[in-house]
Image (cartoon, rainbow, N blue to C red; front, side, top):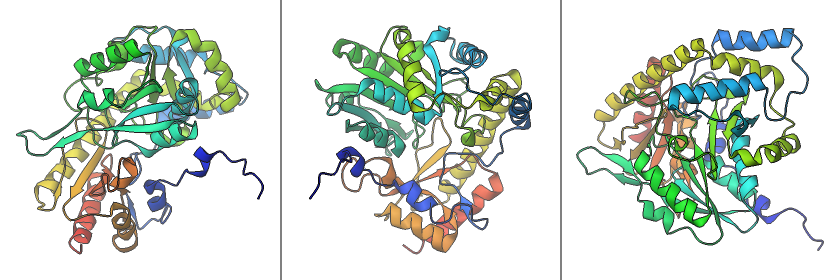
Length: 397
């Protein structure tokens, strides 16, 4: 038998549960899709118009590999007004989609055989990206305290620290979190940063839901607020969520300044650079008009959260921990033991799409298999109907 040249880390990749479910009925007009992390709002007209104008103006050639300077400056200004952080523009790169920013950060840090400690549950593309670059994935699972007076997700930092060893290159944290809506507070960020500094470990902080918070703050606590410019910190952000731009595939990476040139080389090799005319839409998104839309999106999500809360309050087999941020309901269902099969049955029989909880980690058999995730950044009437269909389907279990 001839040698198989395909890397073992690639041969072991499997389609995640979200994709398996969505592939059954993607685009079906009779199905209520709550499976993906996107609103049902179309990208606002002022953003689309800016991209159209760029097309009409002939902005169809290669741009700089790290993004055009007006957009990088707009990102710099965004961080200053939302987080109060004044970044050096040389720390800002736009490699393409935020997912590519995740892959780029992992490529920078990981050799085959290294490991990445990831706070879970988490969007499956994160740990799959780590596997793609040849890293071992280790999970530090959030605790779900249902019994406290105010149930909340919490993180025992010792779960992170105990997973780290000489081969640990990065700690990956998503806050506000997908799928839980958990938010990491500054005291824990400082503790993780101090631990990572002492051991030469990088932090990758996924902050794509940073402004989708419901406690009156403009932005969730950011690692950028507690870190020094030369720390080994990589912050991921995206236009997809707060500006309803999922299909645009534009995101950014904040990184140490000392590797700016190398990131430019990597971006050329990976993607040549972000789409030229899409960057002009992104500049419009970061304008005052874009801030207004971002606030509108947050209020839409807040209203959706209340729809789900009212629904959960009326159930005896469904509960959740009310999310502090992002736009997901991670619903626990008593008696559910196979979330993938249940989600597939929902598509076939109830015509509603959800993400199976088992997709959000591979942290042991049955991890999160009693959960499904829904996106509540939706029209309230459609969201209510989708929840009603889930309730009826659950009754048959």
